Picture (tube, each protein chain N blue to C red):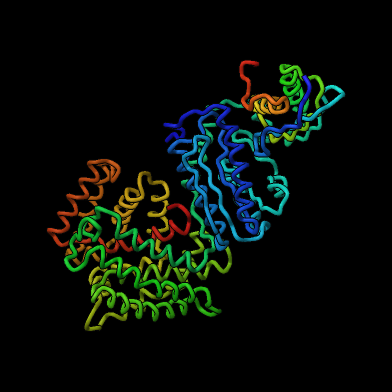
Length: 464
Length: 97
């Protein structure tokens, strides 16, 4: 992919006029928000092409990362100028002291990837001038191509533009393959991302067999509206889940899960109240609740990798598979998961959770991070990748046989052969599959739950 | 030509240069601060002096804050500054070049 494709070259006058405009606009913002900090974010791209669809995507991704790094700092206002011919740029108004914001800017600009491609200026009304890299204690920006001072290379014309473009394209690719990190966010933000994840999942369409706004799939008793009601009814639960992880003091991690489980049982009842007794989100209450709690817990120590998050989840759920599922032998009334464990030794959602959601972390998230197209297209393809990589216990239950798994894999294989959601053929095949699922009363609820988790973490990591 | 009033052009943005011109009596004198290595000082001064010469300005105090501007940027900003200092229309006179 070439991120400069379809970009319009601009002349020097436009570039310089934009610098004048930016300076004037910044001054205005500083005056308007005298007690806050103004952060200017823009790309640092050599050559006459300063904006293109690809550059806008690059900007958005870097900007999202910065937003996540700002974490719990209060962003009061935001001014977006994504389509300016002189390049996408944004101004943030942050209610915080300038040194704290400065520290985030240093972190962002120290990053090997974003530091080379982005310019972040931090300023405030009462500070005489904006903080340059030097004032932040950073070395001069390194050249994209060699390790010398970028400004010296520019002045000397040390490299060709083609070389520069190559490196920028490479950096962009690298950004999309760098594992995301989880920065501490406010409780309100985490809960909001959890609810967004639920609503994104039901909105993605057309999903084979599942409920979405255009089709109820193989679910006669629910519509997209049932899911909206159910999602909102879980707000309180996610707040509780967050508090459990945040307030937890000492002892075995498994006791966090025991606390969460109690809250989860109450949440299931709230779900049934909101949906008039229909099970919309039982799986999500379990697994998304776990992630929200784990994130609240791990955020107490600052930024975390996905691996660290996984370890916390594993710690919370230690022994759950044997406890829950082995105890099910001899029980009279079995859940679907318990039945399948007895019949096929499939551990289902409990197994995925106990392993720290490996399908989400190692397969779905990296896939989504590199996926292209609209949000809907990206999430459709991610859903199908997930479905391809799990033994969906919900699907097996509905099919009544595990033989459905190889059949499903064939369909998914065909879907990706057709080019996935971004091609008309792939998209139309999804409609065909939806019809087929409806006829056979099939659905991929397990995959849908994993899509919710993937979306939630993508939101937390700033990639969606 | 004499500088009529103190005038400024350019910003403190990276890759830009801010040039301030005021009346002088001792030829073209420079007060230059640059983000980049000293090696470019003479080139920056030469570029600005050349622009001033095109407008027939022989005496001026020139304050320069360079943020790593390319030569063409320095030229453009210098032109705007001169036009403003000479009370000409605030449009770079590209024909002069």
